[in-house]
Picture 1 (cartoon, rainbow, N blue to C red):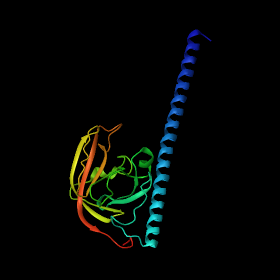
Picture 2 (cartoon, helix red, strand yellow):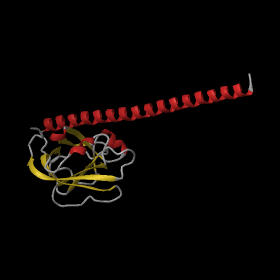
Picture 3 (spheres, rainbow, N blue to C red):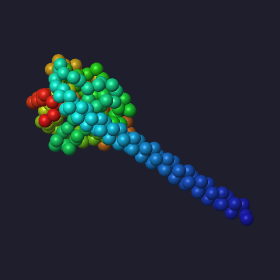
Picture 4 (tube, rainbow, N blue to C red):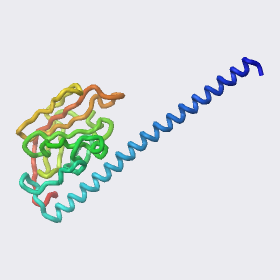
Length: 213
């Protein structure tokens, strides 16, 4: 074999090796991505199942949903509320905490903040590419419904704003206020540079004696 032939063969071998390496890397990335999605789905199902158990337990016990009544556990990862936005088809169980582990299961309630319907600001956050993806279509005037230890509360979206990711724009208030936050833009590739903040005020409140309607 000539020198040129040997060089050509080596080049072909090098290209094949590089192609094989790229295929392996791609497969590994797909496996990691699929594993993350699967873990999120499992965590979400567990949160929903636990929410159903909590509702059943409270119905049997006849617990009253009020500020002075029994409250759900506030341990990290524990379901503390249900959040629905009818027009967007959003229906999620909210868990306590906003770390990566909690946000895999569903939207997270900021620890130390008010529960939806209680006096003060209740902050609920979620990833833009998962549970809060529908927020890309939210508008002022939309209806938001929460169920928590303070009963079923109907909210009306009154304000929407976009701030820089590093800015602190969560106001502490004494009146019941609901704030939904997620990274922005919704379809941005890579770490999003901004944050969407959706504010809502109470349009109606319903408290029932057995926690169900």
